[in-house]
Image (cartoon, rainbow, N blue to C red):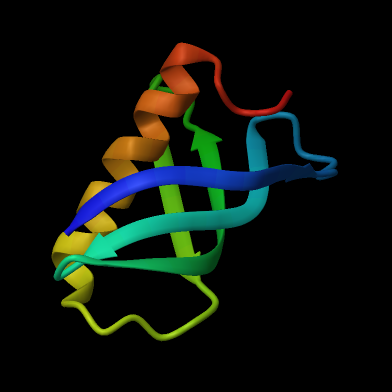
Length: 87
């Protein structure tokens, strides 16, 4: 499993300043096959400085969810740290 890219990431308006909610599409490579999966995710910054990332897949994926979610959260965290998410 490999994350190739995120496409069409849009930020949703949320009145809570410490929570950002996004939707988009992730392109995954699963067993030498490219799959587009629609998803929603949120990044909430806790008072301790810790980020909580919650990912919701809008489609079924034929791959074990635990390693997939772990990789998606790491990828989203890197996008957030680098400033690549829409503001």
